[in-house]
Length: 103
Image 1 (cartoon, helix red, strand yellow):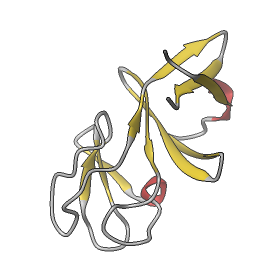
Image 2 (cartoon, one colour):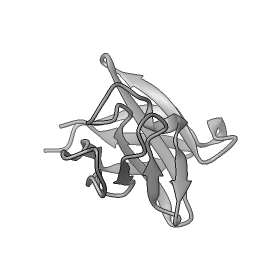
Image 3 (cartoon, one colour):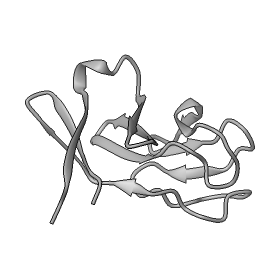
Image 4 (cartoon, rainbow, N blue to C red):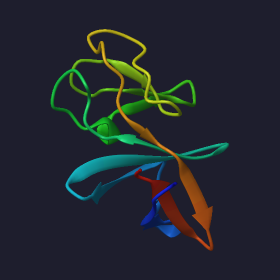
């Protein structure tokens, strides 16, 4: 059963991404053309904040430290030096509030 947790408000977005802390885990929430997506903020290759990276091709985030790329929608690693994906979380919005499923 999903465990939906409110993590942000839609009006917090000044750009395409914010970072939130849930239970000690930093989670990057991206606002893309087709909705909101959430992945772990820490690159799976080295300690670096993906929310500080560059968004490419509308749904790819490039790590600011070594350039590994990840699919924002799935967390899949797309290039070296990352060889592991990052966790992704289902997102839903209700009444301007953003929820993620942390189950």
